[in-house]
Length: 371
Image 1 (cartoon, rainbow, N blue to C red):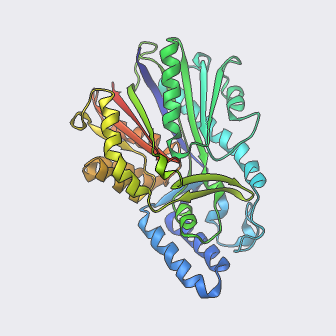
Image 2 (cartoon, one colour; image 1 turned 60 degrees about the vertical axis):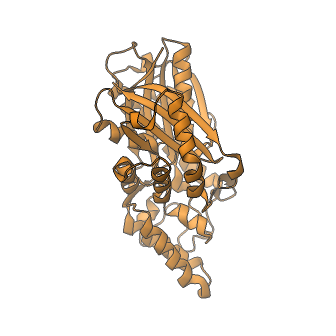
Image 3 (cartoon, rainbow, N blue to C red; image 1 turned 120 degrees about the vertical axis):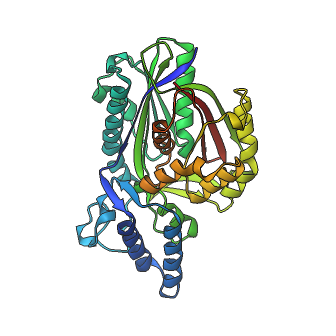
């Protein structure tokens, strides 16, 4: 039994934040909040980080990031210090309707791409780490998409940037156990809801990287429908236990806060080669058998580290860089944006190695064959 991906689609939040527009917002907040003797240094650090990301556009559910006058803010308070800073509860008020609307948009596109009817879907897998509520997005999507009321639902939460791989693995396991199953998977993240205003370097780095987006895919047995994009050959994961502190995601009173350690690229360089070889060995493949690499663009230094660990050429990560440039890091859906672009350049029979990383520090991978 082979699991096939029949449909793949993406969607982004309603508001686009071009590079300079968003940088202007971040700069004004840093200037307003920094102590006078530290302001110049904090702004210089922000400028350096922003310049080095390579990101030209991000999308966001919060239009305030694109405004020049705080009197026009709708989400943040009307001052550049952003006092009082929005609570987690206020952020979830935005997350609930917006995440479901965005997920519905991507799911409808994925079903249309797969030429699959809503009545055919037997399982729904929802991946997200930027919000929590119940009845959750799974139940609301069943109603909004017109799925059957007996659709089996799974929520995969708080796994961060590698969540799409766990959604893929869940879909693969479902299809392998039930040849008639049709799995709709959706990854939806509103990272910009969790913008933080402290001036720690790791916080400013995160503020310069993350955006909002969604991706959905349809999976079923390879003989269930006509057509399709690719077959799932093998998946693999590995937790590096001595790096638990390097990437973290915590629920706070004022949104969710992220820890991004400077050692992450070093960890990926040191352990990435072994991970890639183990992933490929599980499918009886070597690196030369891989026709293209689908790398989660966590940031420019993450891409560099994976390129070096895999002894890849710069062209092997060019699509990952293009997605980072056009969307930023959207957490779990981002690697599916890369996959969607890669499929435009792939031919039948090509084998793709898809790689992702997240809290743990966890490395995830999948080997896929284009049909």
